[in-house]
Amino acid sequence: MYSEKVMDHFEHPRNVGEIPDADGVGQVGNPSCGDIMKVYIKVADGRIADCKFKTFGCGAAIATSSMVTEMVQGKTLDEAMEISNRSVAEALDGLPPIKMHCSNLAADALHAAIEDYRKRHGS
Ligand code: FES
Image (tube, rainbow, N blue to C red; front, side, top):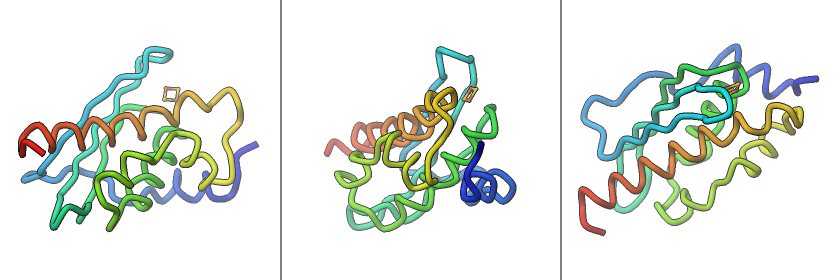
């Protein structure tokens, strides 16, 4: 039911925690379940230099966030904005249809963190 990649990221999530001096922070809630996701980014030379997450969410939310924090490393902000819940789910070899909504949290929180960064830096 869950791919090996999903289970791996759920059992060994990457980049959990917060970045105290983050350049951008995004927090979103999932209206369908009430779970919460927070994503922190550091930006250097227009690229994501570090990304961490904290979630009050289900296993699929943990796995997708973990994958997002790996996918964004070194990406430009525009490239990072293009990461969608679908591309994250594909990188994890798929999610059960009933859990697809969980992958919105990670992508949405990442986009919110980038928007926060852009607001703070006027770019
Ligand atoms: Fe809420 Fe998965 S059930 S994010």
